[in-house]
Image 1 (cartoon, rainbow over the protein chains, first blue to last red):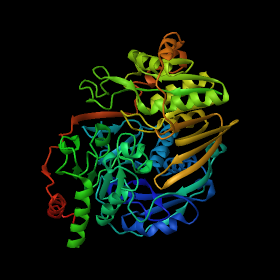
Image 2 (image 1 turned 180 degrees about the horizontal axis):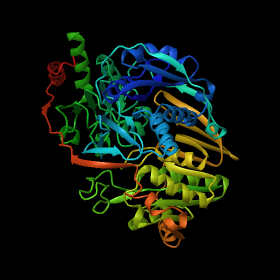
Image 3 (image 1 turned 135 degrees about the horizontal axis):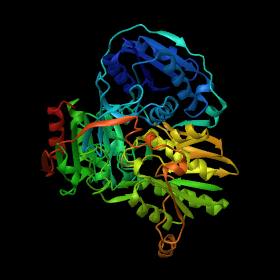
Image 4 (image 1 turned 60 degrees about the vertical axis):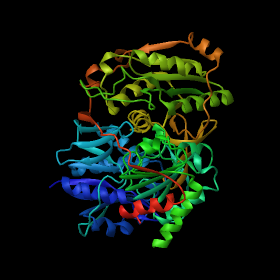
Length: 319
Length: 259
């Protein structure tokens, strides 16, 4: 079977991201998964064990400042060279900002079609996408070149399939044009040990109804009790209650967790665009007419400052 | 500084949106079409840079006839002129082909800085800035929540999953922005009147040296095979809190095995 390249997403703090394990799981249906690690020196050795657990038969590594010190262009060059050499059956990347950016450059370099935010990929290359704020399902195919797709986190259940991958260091030859945008500084802002928003199994989100930044402690407390990530509506972000990288909705992140808890969120269509495909949705809002209740599996009409502390207390009691 | 802002007309994301049943493309005919919201932030950023450093702001749009409405709307915010790439052969173009056309147009406009929104609300594909940079061999600084211009040096604070990155490059460059970068101005009455007289140049594929079979359905690198409406979610249980709403909610979470 031919190789399927999976471009690895990982963080220094948490290691291989869950979406990478999802991609390896998907890749096994299409061929033999090979992971591609693009990062700082030593990245591949640190990640190879985990990648092997989920079926990576091989790990290609391109490491060092040439890769890590510039914005995505060198990474795309390395992957494009690898694609030309190994002629894979498909290339999978995460549907994150960086994954889409690398894929964008690959598509131009290889004159190849691209499909983003894919939730499933069949063996014949047919991809499933959920579009228009979760209101339509689209099946698409790359018609020129190989299936080059970015996979939306929380689309597939990662299943282990042990392998012992050998790490192959790639020779990195990037051009001056690849080095036009230099990364001067990387600043981590993620707080605590909460899971990443797009990957979390549980998301607890607060909206305008939370009232102010301090009150978001209530949202955070419930997120921690449920082992989830914290999200925020655009109204809450625009009001300065919570940082933008946690925004869920049309101009923020799209999440698809097992459980989405909406606190003080009315549920404007722009918000629903980012959370509509969640498996179970619960909502607390004082306005019984709020549109969020139209999609909530369980809704409580009430004052979140009374309801949420009671929820927290009850969960603690049951633990 | 010569700035070009990419503007896309999209179906209003606040209304019902559909794909056409005949050719699987976005239904723009029956939709209420608006400027892609994120592009308004790019226009605002361009105007701020022009106000601080001088120069000219040009709107670049690829789209059907009716995209003219969005071009005039964009001009009413303050840009100097616009270029509309208009050709029947463009209908059905994929992202890769679109980038070819826009890159060809940008090649004629000699921009120091190309500004655009980080994504459009219809496709949400988010690939155009890097596709254009790749084709033009210029820098891309994407996902800006802050942009600083110092002579020919651009510095961008870019939102990432973990926090932010500071990235820098020299012009010419493509910069895409998020809606956290500024607060777009509303067009003034004077601006709306002035926009009617601002020059809008129309370019066809032949003007750009792009062949008709490189774009549209003929040149598409991907295709929608089929599409269907996702069944809408139905409302579940709704209770009114009368003192035990929290406990009832946990009860539900417990039956669903979340607690």
